[in-house]
Every structure is written in structure tokens, then in C-alpha cells.
Length: 323
Image (cartoon, rainbow, N blue to C red):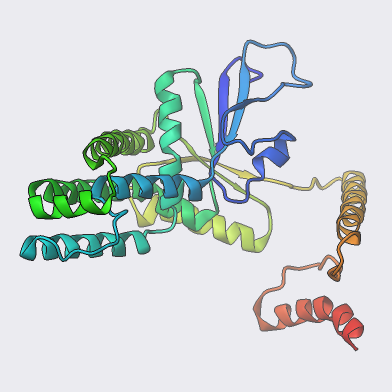
């Protein structure tokens, strides 16, 4: 896309953080980094990349909530009589929600940055590299959940402001910190975030702007997982906003015997180089771990019998060294 003249941003919310490795650039800073288009003919397009840490993004979101409702205090909800008890119950309910957030919530929180990029209009193509299948499915329905959660937080904040005794208690526990100013700033941040969630939901639902691309490899287990994802998106949830237009099968071998032989030689050379690198990385360790090389099996290990065969290969060398 960049070679075709588009300004492209590729953003990863996958905790594995392999995007930087794939592009061979350092993306640890959490901000957009321009990628030189080496080997690409001169073009007016551009490519920028960013890795977002979902855990850090969710932690920042929780911090804003804490700031808004005064949960930085020692948690005592006894102030204010019945009103304080109601407030304490509300805090308890909210705490349970945060403890049981659905998988994919952290990634959706991180995607708020994507909405900011789109609003600025710097890029006409934004590519999201998401986490594995299950997270992705839940992620698609999470913006609405987070919008509702924010509404609950704002309701609790209004209860705090309307209860003079609770508010006085929290101000006292804050040790001189200006909770009113901090609360207003946090409220503005949450309202802005809520709007971003609405925008994200609308963006997911816009089939003219958004496409979901499934990438798989031609192995039985990978294809089964991808088919389940495709069915879930297409049949199980007909209201699922994102439509799938394309499925990419990666690493497909041609039927040509010479091509297959050449490919296998490249794979073997690459594996040998990687194993050497792995061994070198462990040589300087005081307690060097054992490296077990399991041969490539001619079929995928499935069922008890298949997994037993794999375990025998995996444990053979370790058992010998243990003896």
C-alpha cells in the first residue's frame, strides 16, 4: 500500500510484540516510528509503525477511574452513613467489574490511540495487527461494554459529588491533594475516551472503511481455528460489525519438485542458523538451560497417540541427560 502511494500506519496490540522484529526496527517506545521503504521504488507513500502495550494502556485507564472516584483513598466507605455504604457498595461492584474484564479489553483500550491517528487524518490506511483469534472475537464487542462501564463510573462520581460527607472524607484521605481539579480532569479524559469508544464501534461497523483479514497457514490445526473464526464472524453473530472479504493462506508450497527442494533447503539453513543463535544466547548463562531439538514430524500431532509420539521425541534427550 505504501508502494502504491498511500500513507500507511501499521499498529500492533499483540502482546508478543513481533512487529518490530518483522520490520527490523525498534518500536519499544510506544510511539509511531517511520519505516524506511528500503527496496521500494520511489513513491509518495509512507509507512509508519507502532507497538502499543495493552497492559500499560489498561493500567492508565484504571488510573483515570481511580482519580475520578477517589479510589486512591484507603478504601474506607464508612463515611456518610447510609450514603457512604451505598458508595462503598458501588465501589465494590466496580472493583468486581475490573477484576473480571473480558479478554481483549486491554487491546480495545489501547486502540483509543488508533482513533486519534484517524482523526488527525495523517494516514489513509491503518493496519491493525491483533492478538490471537479468541481475543479478536471478544475485542470486536468490547467497545460497547467499555462505554457502559464508563457510564457506570460517571454515575459513581456523581454520587461522590452529591454526598458531602463522603466527599469530605475522600478529600481528607487525599492529604491535601486537590481532588476537585483532579476529578474534573479525569472526568474530561473519561468522556473523551467514551467518545473514542463510540467512534471505534462505528469504525468497526463501517464495511466501506473496515475489512477483517484472516491470515492462516495450511496446516490442519491452523485451518480449523481460522474456519471457526470465519464461521463465528459470519454465521454465529450475524450482527458482528466487521465483514471478512479475504482469507490469506501463508507459506503454501508449489507442486514443482525443484521449488519444494529449494524451499526445504532454505528452511533447513534458516533453522540451523536460528539454533546456533539460540545456543550462543545461552552459553554465557551460569545455569544454562538444556536445548532439546525435536525433529519435524510428517503430520500434526493430534489426539493422545499423536501427542504421545511428540512427547517421546521431546523427552528422550532430557531423560537421557537426567539419568
